[in-house]
Structure formats: structure tokens, C-alpha cells
Amino acid sequence: MQPAVPTPAPKAPARARLRPTMQSDLDFVLTLERDPANLPYITPWERTQHEAAIRFPDFRHFIIEGGDDFAAAGFLILVGCKSPNQSLELKRMVVQHKGQGFGRAALRLARKIAFDDLGAHRFWLDVRTHNTRARGLYESEGFVLEGTLREAVRGTGGFDSLAVLSMLHDEFEARRARAQELPR
Image (cartoon, rainbow, N blue to C red):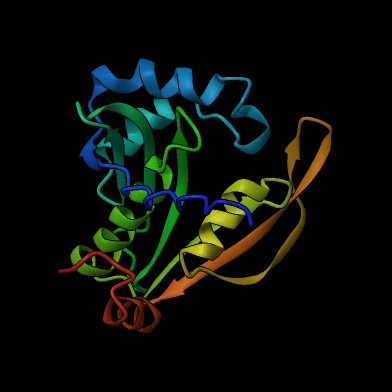
């Protein structure tokens, strides 16, 4: 009989927080966008686009801070914050060091902001279909596939399709009732 192998303790959730992006953060943001590891999955913006997103009331531009020292770990952008249709988009989320849980933690914070603070009825995003890591994260966090926009954006090797996923307020509240979301 083989000796029992101890089961590893569950990994503690990553510590993360969001803070509004400042002009002084834009070099970090632009560096992340232009990182070769991220380019296949996003369409980088110009500095002026990020500057506008910082100032325009319909946007929320955040730096993801994570780890024990809450160092800059990425950024995310919400669009539609003033939408009369209460449909808010996660326009972009880029994390510097993948696989450490900062993306999941930031997504949970962004959902809480979308539904609790900004009164969203629908929180949605699109993701390039070949970005299986991000899509797996979104689906594991309760986002529902709505459909595919075929060959909708220019990619590095031609045109890429986008999967559109969303979560509705009622779905968010049901997840909260099951303790799958951050408390109020």
C-alpha cells in the first residue's frame, strides 16, 4: 500500500485592489499593452485614448494593485458607466504576471463596482476566441457566452473573432447568495 500523499492546502485568494489611474501611471499601462505577451490578445491604445478614458465620465480606468505590498499588477477599463441602458463593458483587463490570481481578484472587484456602485443591469465583455486562458477565467466566474463576432478585429495573423460574454444583475445576486461574490 502506498503512503498517503498529503493534500495541499487550498491557495489563498490573491490580494488585490483597484485605484483610479493617474497620468503618472500611463507609462506602466502603455508598457503592459505593448508587451509581446499581451499583443496577441488586445488592440493597444494610444496615450491620448488612455488620457481621455481617465477624464471622461463614461469611463473608469483603474490600476490593479496586488500582492502583499499592493504593487501595480495591471490595469482595467470600464466603459458605459453613464449608460441609460445600464449596460457596462469591461473594455480591457491586462495583468502583468499571469497565473497569480490578480486577474480573478480584479474581475471580482470590477463586477462589484459595476453592479453595486454603478447600478449595472448587464456587465459584458468580448475576448478574442484564441485567448482561452481569459475566456476560461470569465466562464469560471459566471459569465455566459452570448455569441461570436466572426473575424471582427485585425489580429497578428489576419482577423480574429470575438466571443461576447455577459452577466446580468440577477445572476450576480444569485452568485452572491451562494457566497461566490464579494459581499456588499
